[in-house]
Image 1: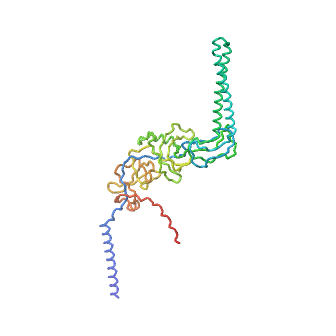
Image 2: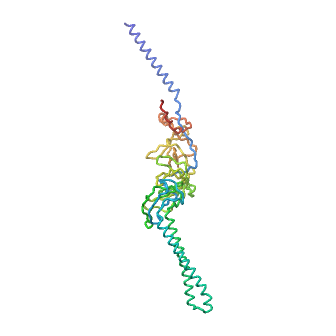
Image 3: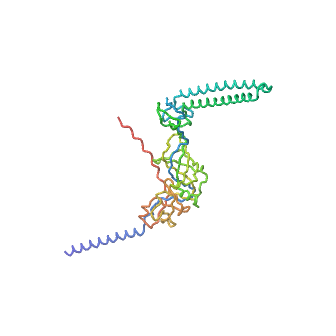
Length: 395
């Protein structure tokens, strides 16, 4: 019985000794070895000249628009174009009944011939009376009457020529032609319709869309803030301002435009200023009246810094980033954010040349708060590739 108690005591002592030895080794390992500092992806802040982009709403407007209207009264006999097609200047679009105007021309030509015959007779009589009045064979009053008749005949001829020209013009108006080249819309009248020159009946609409205008509106307050800013370099020449068009789905047009002018008058109802840009539109992607977004680079920031958006923490109390301090410890740094440039933010203040801004590895950094970190260059993720086309089903 005593031997069993002794053996049990020895086993307990041995187990306690082993446990104490294991704890001592663990404490020694923890005291002698520390985990390596976590790696964080960083970028080096670099001051550069940045073109600040402003995104504004705009409407598409054709460079030239012509309303095809009737200039004589009559019945439309033919439509000579395809709706929605391209037409050239001078192309005949409609044919109005020309019979009344042809008759009016012939009547005017007959009246002109009669006036010319009267002029011939009056001129001959004036020639005969001239030597007679000099020889006192006829009275001077008779000669004056003959000369007046000649002048009246000349006036009748001039009026006849004008009447013929007017009749020819009206006859020409029966063939309605395109005043400009461009794309024509639907016909607004059909064959058999009675059109009126008095009401100037509209027949169709032609628009030139190979190049289009963009009527852009900008807040006058925003424009004045750009002009007053001491840190920005405003572009004074409108031609030097590039224009990028963004469609409703976010697609950017490959064709870049140019700013033509900025209006000097503020709309009193909206407080906005009108800007006009010109954009090539040879593929007719932009349609008249279409709503688009327009990106303009109206000013340059001489010493701006770009940082990826994921590096910036935005709160109600302000914006901040983490930078690697002198002792390799992450430090928060308040910054002033300007605007978005692609996937980056423009930092206006708070960073200086050479600062290492932490972009990636925040979770590992927070797990070891207060510990040094190992900065490594951050590589942007590759752009997502287009999905591969689905393979055809096997037969």
